[in-house]
Length: 61
Image (cartoon, rainbow, N blue to C red; front, side, top):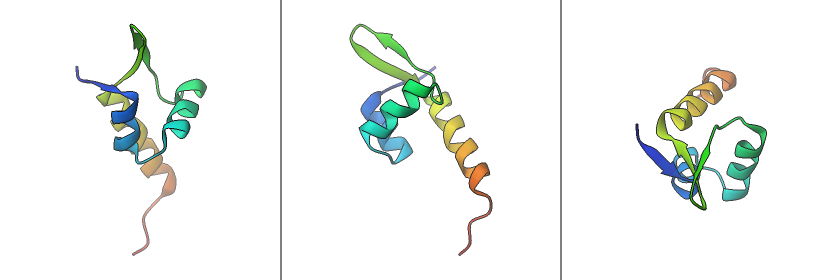
């Protein structure tokens, strides 16, 4: 079970740190604290990416 820091999760999602904070605050991306650091599971970040890709539909190229 691999964990990611907030910065790593934001990089993986291709979003800003403030957008990531919004995703965490709304619960769209589950997270937990280890000491003072907010962490997310890699599997949860990947699941969010998959949900967003499915919601966008087929990409036009």
